[in-house]
Each structure stands twice: as C-alpha cells, then as structure tokens.
Image 1: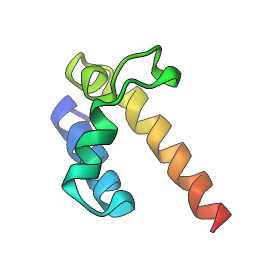
Image 2: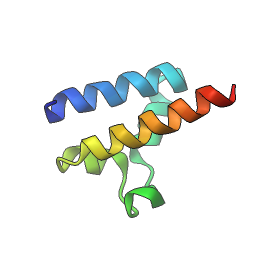
Image 3: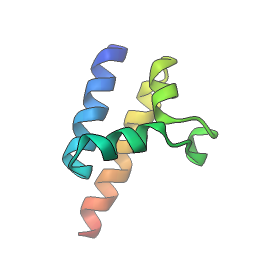
Image 4: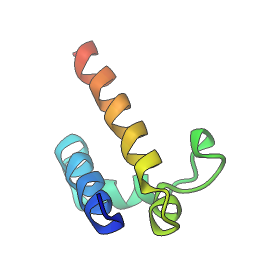
Length: 67
C-alpha cells in the first residue's frame, strides 16, 4: 500500500467513525501518546502511516465490539 493509499484509508475510516471533516482534522493533528507524542498526520507524512492505520483499525474494531 502506498503512503497516499494509507492516508486515504485512514481518512475514510475516520470519516465513517467521526462523521465530519473537522473532527477528522482534529484527530489527525492531535499528538498521541501511543505514537510517541507524534501526531497521526506527521506519522503519515513521514512514511509511517501503516502504524497509524493499524492502530486505528484495532481501535475501531474494539469500539465496534463494545457497541
């Protein structure tokens, strides 16, 4: 998967879960402890988007199980 494809998949998952672009941008720009204090966007831009995608997919799978 290319970095662009990863970025698009992350965006798609976030839109589905959060529901709007503003919330997606907030999530992407907020530093995360589980990413070593980096923002998801910085990780994606730096070529480590698979880490973000894996984390997001795991979190969403857990969230869906809790519903």
